[in-house]
Image 1: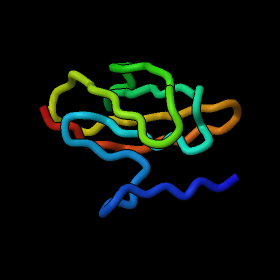
Image 2: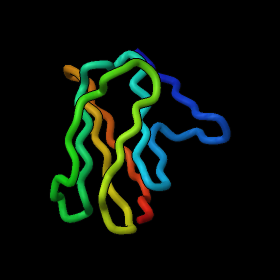
Image 3: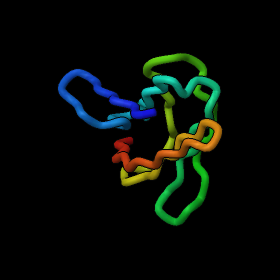
Length: 83
């Protein structure tokens, strides 16, 4: 299954200002894990609804990795958070 995901004026699966937004099209019930660049988990949660899910993350300004997993499907993206 191919997921085509868009947010107005953005083509990314993940994007951020002060929060991480994940499009859960067909992935509801999956997990979201956010890592810093050292591999430390800074957030873990569930995709609770179809469409866009927003997660407020208390983290310092910088790049983070977001991994979404549902069954055997896994996708990882990079976001830049600002505090």
